[in-house]
Length: 159
Image (tube, rainbow, N blue to C red; front, side, top):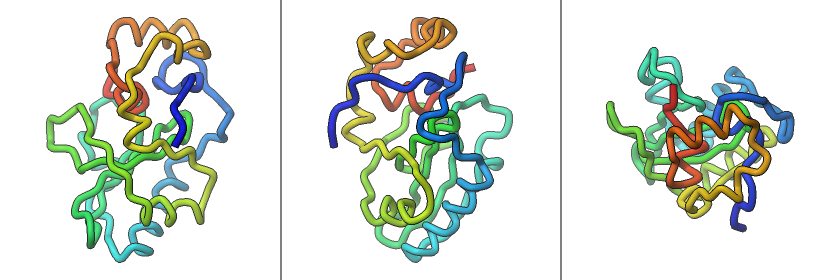
C-alpha cells in the first residue's frame, strides 16, 4: 500500500462534504457487513446503532465474530467511504487497533467501491501537509483535537 499524501475533504465529519469517492449510505454498509461476515463464515454480533448510543463519531461500525480472527470491528468513515478493520474496541476505548484482513477485504470488494486504508496507512503520522484539501471548519477541529495518526483522523469520536 502506498503512503497517504493528502486526506479527502470531509474526512473529519465536520465542514464540507466530499463526493469522491461516492458516499455509501448506512443501509448499503449494513448489508455489506452481513454479506461479508457470511462469506468468511462469521456473524454480526453488534450493529452500528447498538455501539455507544448517543456518542458522536464520524464512522459507522459493525462488530463481527470471525472464525480465524475473533471479534473484529468493521469501520466505515461515513463521509468518505473509507473502510478499515480493527480489533473490536472495549466500552470506553477511543483509540483503535487497526488490522489487515485480506479475506474480509476481498468479501467487501465484491459489493461496492469502498476506499480501503490498511493498518500501516492508518498508523501513519498525521501531518499538516496532508490537510491541504480540508476546509476551515475541519482545520479548526484538527487544531483542537490534534490527531496523531491518520486512523485518529479518519475514525474519530470528536464532538
